[in-house]
Length: 127
Image 1 (cartoon, one colour):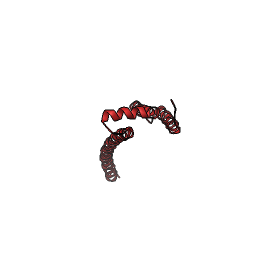
Image 2 (cartoon, rainbow, N blue to C red; image 1 turned 30 degrees about the vertical axis):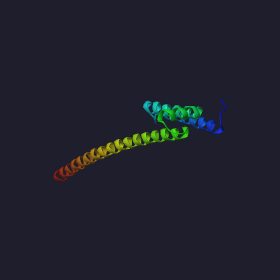
Image 3 (cartoon, one colour; image 1 turned 90 degrees about the vertical axis):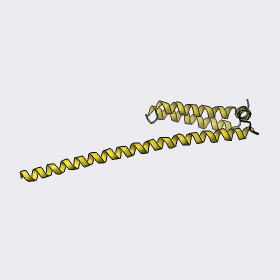
Image 4 (tube, helix red, strand yellow; image 1 turned 120 degrees about the vertical axis):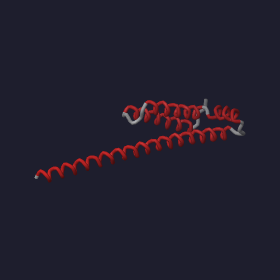
């Protein structure tokens, strides 16, 4: 199997990404679900880098497209839409959590201020 320079570069980049995922997991910045998801994505791209012609031909036949490169673009765009949607859902969930935490902090801060005010009033009446 003859490999082109772009395939070698792609595999080196994917190898770097794999080690980065492992390092992020080791440092606690990534949970095991993230490791599994990124490992699957990296593996898929490694397979595409290793067997671009065979995979594009297979995808082309499955999707009924004219050229193999078109098939890779269609699949890549679909994966990108999926990733963007997943990121959107995560950001939305994070925004809701931040809003809820802000409300709780505001309520607790108001309660603390009311207690302080009552304590100060109690000291003024005692003094």
